[in-house]
Length: 243
Image (cartoon, rainbow, N blue to C red):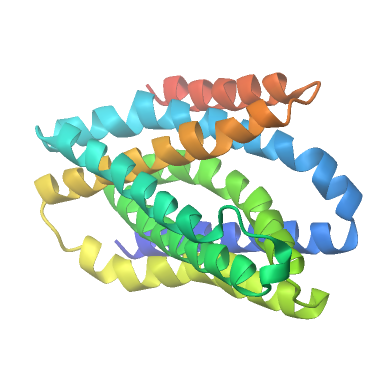
């Protein structure tokens, strides 16, 4: 159990590091970050969707026969949460100042905090399940850091303050969520763990299919489809090599 904790914590720290790298890159190499972030998005989407449908969801059903209910609940929860966030930021101009950056920053911070819960849940089920989920989740942290920073810059914050706030909201919250949730998740029953795993899978499907893929469609790049296929292929190789 101690090894599980350190593996989950290490994965959450890696996610925070990748987010921080994204923030650093967009601040110091803005053109490169804008041009290539879509490839990270596509690759992460391919991994998350494949891992969710081919491993995490079947695993959840083997632990809890009612996993489908929690899968649906996980997907809808993130959908409604994002609708709530968008209700505050849609159709607003940058002239309306700080709230246009702060509101989505809070939303991204909450999302990253929940990511920490997913690390606790998946690594508690098994190291393999945790590593599969972490592969896609860590990669999607890079563009998330970029997005958070750009929103804060657009809202009128200075570069230094935008970097600091983006780091707190998008990076620090992930290991914090893992530390807060792990003591409780490691002590729950197998059926309840299956329910949580299924809920997490619903959240991962939402992030991959509803949050990441639309970016790939609205920002078509020459090799974006190859990045998506590469993510799917990596997930398939990992999953079936284990089997």
